[in-house]
Length: 351
Image (cartoon, rainbow, N blue to C red):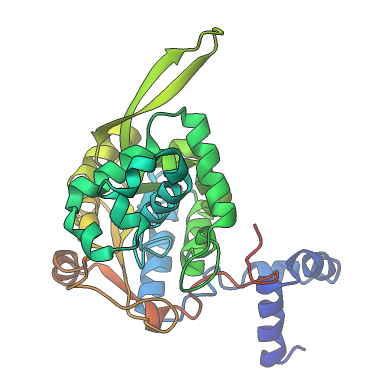
């Protein structure tokens, strides 16, 4: 009979290193079924948030139960920045745009004297901040438009394969939250269809989300710019990204985007900021069993700690709404025993 410590060690080995090999050995030994019944959310500490999730899933999937929801209606929506991956020191799509400006600068000598590009290239954060939203839109237009959607997707994939976070020195797509990866898999194993509903650009997110989250492009809802159909001189059709905004999928835009692109009200939603408030309100306003969750960034050691006074990922009104509505608030420091996926190669997670 295995001791408790040995069982814990076996589970740890399965999670981090030896999953494929141990799965074969345990199957031969007749123990695979036992391990299959182990905790589906191992990176979540036992506590109220974890129990709220598992209890909700049990209720809505119990055939004949009072809260049963048919699989077709088990829609779960997740914000991305700050909910599924880190959003500090600034949104990762902005980091991509900044790196694109640096790469494109030799082809645009006028940027050396023209704002906001001059401030960015000189790392003058004060001058860059002074350009405000107009400056940000100029940067995004210069780095995201005037190319085909295929070319842009290729740039995003190349950037993720090379760029590293300034604090953690890891690829940006390795700074996803391990507990949320487990939650996505757990929901899908129980018949849920998982969607990302984010203020980030949809063309920026779709090239990598299936690989990282298991969420296919057609289940990614985001902000979008105008895309134009064109036919090249050689007769080949293509889609060209233009420097015009079509739809902002943030705040009140999120339930609008859900209605427009998904067509079903979710029964389960997770966010982390005031930008997710309306999505959470829309979710719980439906009939039957409903779940609204918020990731509260409280761990300055393993990640970051911020909420009401933050300019990025501000969590103020949504935190009050969670308290008033009995929503599930996940305290990152207390409720997660892991934050990021473990490193399984020299300095990086498995890609």
